[in-house]
Length: 507
Image 1 (cartoon, rainbow, N blue to C red):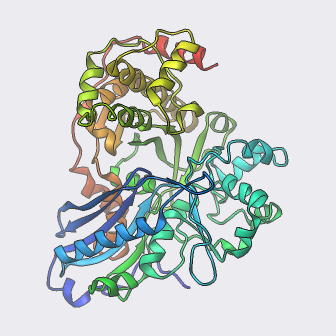
Image 2 (image 1 turned 180 degrees about the vertical axis):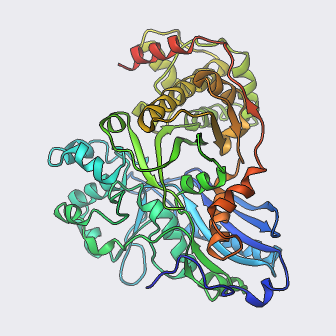
Image 3 (image 1 turned 135 degrees about the vertical axis):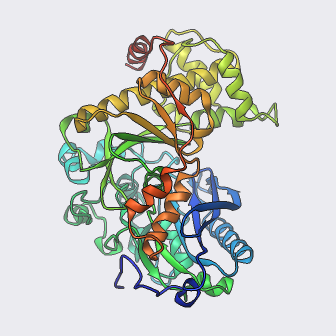
């Protein structure tokens, strides 16, 4: 179907918006541990948000032992949240868009049904696939084309595993859609691939924005299941959408920045000389600009992904608060009311630099007894073994700060530009200790952006798409007034020594 980057003027609610300034945009934000639907209101001058619903989202173990997403439940929760939002704001809803995590996908057959439940990237089946893949392809040349650092979870390797082990599922597929676009299809009735989420796959040409089709076909990946990616802000379907008919309120469905980090970059309001740290389950630190695919970028695990405005997000994907979240899950088995605030207080009081861990080590990527894993890591690397919750939590936070320190330095080397501030968005904005440690470790001030930057960015793309604001420069101006506290670097702690220690234990 043909796409338009923006609706024609007045195409959505023309008679209504001519009489009232107030508009409501529904932002669906899907995370790998929870999801939410938020109503974002714009009165022509200011933005306000109210959370409509939040729901858990965890992979489930299938009969074959694999980890899969419960997709019907996920869609049901999203639809329920949208319906509730429309009931709350029956006269002002304009559009809806979905953002979410990257790399995972679903296969849709010709009848419109799922071929099988989508795998979770934490399933672990692809751990050895990259090494097999690059027996046949030059890894650096593939990187120069796609701009994406190799990770076993990437869509490319999930598909390569399917080619080898489940070819019959590919034979039945009519469309491949990454998870946010798969959910969006349930709202719009249209199978559309959005460019920012496609760029997480390690299969997109980062300069042309098209699939790396010729090479993919030689791998046995059927090119016909990959629809050409559309730009962020494409209006997939107008007010007479399936979700509009379901709720009784006409609303458009927009392909916003479907990748949650791309939405977060929009919602960060970051400008020149500012690095963005999207801090949550994953931590992604980067900057907007042109593709960076030098040998240094390749060796440093730097990825290049599309931003909402067509610029490239040069960033590094890091494990974020996932390790602490998993520790909290284990500790709650004994202390049900334990929360993050309590852990942070205990970590603040704990001994600094007791030990360090490589937070990106694969052993920490799989759900399990995380406190025991950290203790084993410290024991095997000849470091003091943490015993208390505070010690364990502080070790993780300091180790994350070291990763942010070296990532910022690498980005400065690659781009040739120093950064005057790190703008933190996402759940990490709530954690004073982590932000204090990050400022001191990097030597750069840390300014808090909006904790719901993904939701905010999702809505801002909808506003541009539907003509409520003119462009992304205006979006940045709107975000500019939402900045929070700034953490200044201190001289506390020998971060250089801690980083060298990490190099030793991670070797």
